Image 1 (cartoon, rainbow, N blue to C red):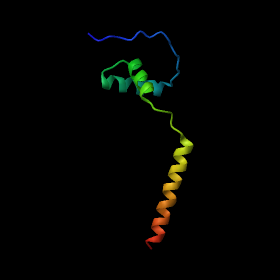
Image 2: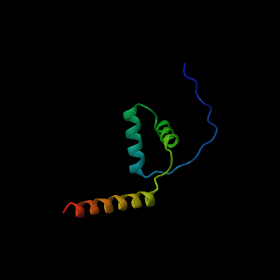
Image 3: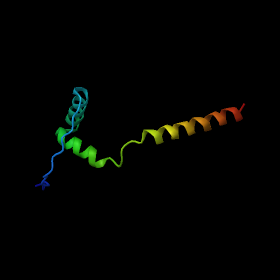
Length: 73
């Protein structure tokens, strides 16, 4: 018999209709409740996406690809 953790804190989060529909669909595909899906996703996330760092990384890759193309000509 599984042991359940006693959860004592509630955090309210607002989702758009499209977001909650996507969350519900994914949870249903996995056969779990949407709250369990959201909890697992939040706890499994290492850190939020740093879009600025990702953009810098992409720019660096593009620059290296450009240098490679010009050196092969």
